[in-house]
Length: 135
Image (cartoon, rainbow, N blue to C red; front, side, top):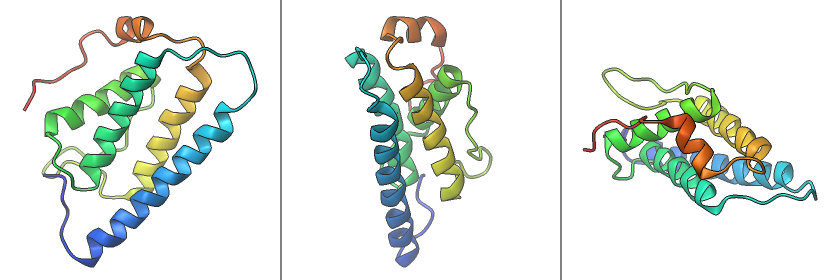
């Protein structure tokens, strides 16, 4: 369901996705390497990265259930307050790598600014029941 076609279009799209992921990782390193005293909750980090991966995998055409994708979008919207620019209608997905990259950057900025004082327990209390039914 996350696939938008075949051939060179998908190859170009994957190249853009790879560049966006690289940019996101570099940005995370730059913003996260401030040299301060920071203890990151590894369970929170795992959840955050897992939800990012779900979105990136869906957008790159990998087999990801729609409800898992929507759950990850809901996770970031509720956690960060940044609403995704994804299209939900006939076809679900960004359809535009610029919008996807913008959301990835915003979510990662939020994480870098908040990771030192957030825990999985705090996040779980903020999120409550954000999940849709499983596929």
